[in-house]
Length: 257
Length: 258
Image (cartoon, rainbow over the protein chains, first blue to last red):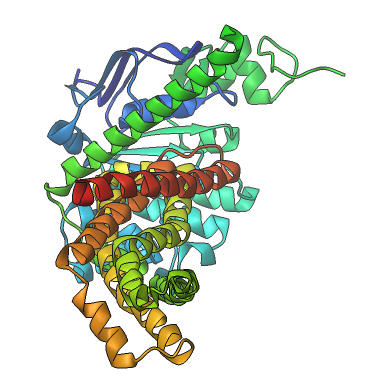
């Protein structure tokens, strides 16, 4: 059996006294699409930022293609980042750059590609997510939320990464646009053959884009399995979450009337 | 008694810690200046933003400062018949103090605030995280171009401000106070030494660096959405203004202390 593409072992992260990740273990094989589900504040985004190297875990190991990346710096970190694309929750497009330059950003700044050539690639990626050349010259503030997500997806796949992270890809979109984005995510990932990790609250999205699902609760993965088995998890926490019930083992910190 | 002193001590320690964090940030940024990749387009853009677009506000400030200075020193010196010193006072005050300090404060209000707001917004909307993921060092891409532009453009602004300030003094002296134009200019030139101009330009370089540094620092560490960005903007202007006044004394001491 080949080594996992991404391997997490005992990953811990706390902010002061608040323990957010309390020993996360998981091995994700290449080509799989993992969706991490869990409530607000359960540590999904922190986990993603630890894998990306934006946050440094307090303990544990994060390996990508067998190479330790937790706390990696300089060229080692560069080498890992070159394999990664990311779609941020709020799209995180650069306001000061037109759409095509956002998409081509890594090609120009990171890989030193000529602007003209990079623009051609960007236009191709924009076409892949259903956006035509006129959109390429607009600025992010001139786009709707759905179009911004498409541009962010085009930017995430622009350098043909081996690994893509999706942070709440459908948050803030209407159900139809959310489904369009889900289809684009699935199509893009399939075309690239990439390994992906997504975090979402949206179960419709999770069911569509995942091959594997993990539920995070109390800083740990309390259930992991194939996406097709999510409805037969046998885990009360998972059942409560996927059916969106207020009653159950997960108690939200809200004051009852 | 300890209840009274404890908050003062805590505030002092907090201020020292903040200064330490600012120094570390500056050290990291300076460390990135000498290593590629370099972003000449971004440096040029910041130079235009800081230098060209600050020119009107600096010109107006120094023009009126020079005019007021001539008027005030004339009415003051008239009490002991030393009106002839007006030209010298105007040129020395403008080149050594007023042009660099006023330009520094104006640029802190205009550019430092804008830097903090722009970088702060990038922080809270995850654009800085996006830069990192896209293999681009935020220090090199965002901070270094602003520091270079700040440190190089403020001396140029001050040089222009020196000339405009002296011209303001000339206008008031010649057209309102009936000074002889040629005599005023000769006195301006005769008593001006190279060190007067150079000290002002060195101050300007330091102030430009400080304005950019505090703008970038507070923006880079802002958090909590719109309120956090607003707070970062305020902090950037206040801390830049304080540092400008502190460093003004330090540099003056370096150049002119006996």
